[in-house]
Amino acid sequence: MLSEHPELVIIPILGEIVVVGLLPVVFTMVNKDSASLYGLRAGRLGKSLLLSLLVVASYYVVLFGTGVSHISVGGLQGLSPSPLNLLYAILAVFAYGPLEVFFVVWLIYNTDRIFKTEAQIVSRGLIITVVVYGLLHTFSAGIASLGIALRFLAFGLIYKYTQNSVGPMAGFTITNDFIWFLLGTLNL
Image (cartoon, rainbow, N blue to C red; front, side, top):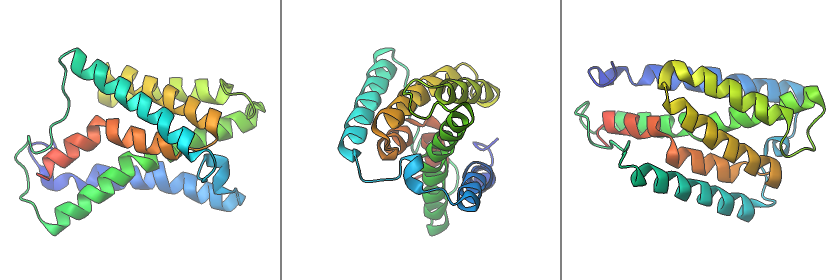
C-alpha cells in the first residue's frame, strides 16, 4: 500500500515511534533507570561497533551471495524529494533503527530482570525476546522474520557481552530492509 500511496508513509513511522519508542522510554523514566542499563554508554563502544560491523558484513555477504538484494533506494516512484520527505526519512531511520533496537534491548534487560538472569550473556531475556520478536514479525515480514530474529540474536549477544547497544543500533539500522524500502518510497 505504501508503494501506491507514499504520502501515507508517516503512519507506520509515527506508530513505530509511539509504540516501540515512547512506551519503553516512559517506563524507563518512571522507573528512574539509568540509560547505561540499556547499553547507552561510552564503555566498550569500540568492541560493540566492531562486533556489530562483523554482523553487518556477514549479513550482506549472505544476502548478496544468494543473489537476493533488498535495497530499493530510489527504486519506487513516490513523492518527489522535499524537505518534508527528508524529515520523514530521518524519522524512519531513527524509528526503525536505533529506537527499535532500544526497544529490543529494553525487553531483553527487563525480561532478564524478571528471571534474575541479567549477568548471563545467553540469558532467558535474550532468548525469549528474540523468539517472540521473530514470531511477531512473521505477520509483517513472513519468512524474512527469521533473518530479523537472527540479527537480533547476534546484536542482543553483542549488547549482553559488551553492555553497549550503540553498535547494535548502528548495525541494525544499516541492515533493516524496511528502512531501505521507506527511503525508496520517499525517493531519497
